Length: 205
Image 1 (cartoon, rainbow, N blue to C red):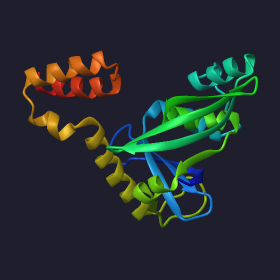
Image 2 (spheres, rainbow, N blue to C red):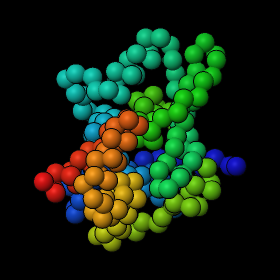
Image 3 (cartoon, rainbow, N blue to C red):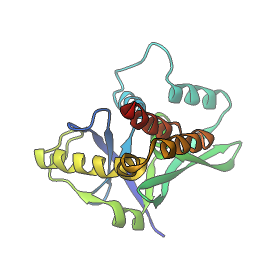
Image 4 (cartoon, one colour):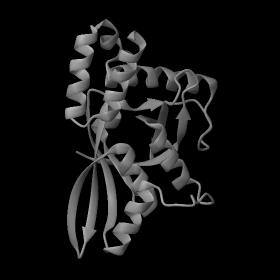
């Protein structure tokens, strides 16, 4: 399968969903964009890495990882978004130390945050872009989107959030079922999902 190099076009904030962001990646030699739903913390980390003039007073988590890696001569060579399953993107970080290459599984938002800090290229496979790529009408300049683009991103964010969190299903569940789902999410260390279920439980109380 052929790899397609991606650049970061910008980060779109949902006007209708509080705290929802979409990271927009664009193919280098094409017009398609790959929207990836990310959390507020990851959006902040990526935005800080993009804005070279902004330096937080203390290292963020991804900055700490970069400092740690530099100290032990670990270099990130590239990031590959290698799989898309049920709306979730899976990524690998290709690292090198002492001329030995290692592949590390990572959340896509974390992988891209680190790729920016290491100035490492970002790739995906053509079949993933064929499946999830979209065309935006806005300006080619980063972080500039037309009203139609913003509406499209809101729609994508809503669909992705419902797919990832199962919000519609949770509304139909009983409290006992919700508590069972909450326990399973915590056991699986899926704390973002656990927070969504907890919010639904709180609405019922």
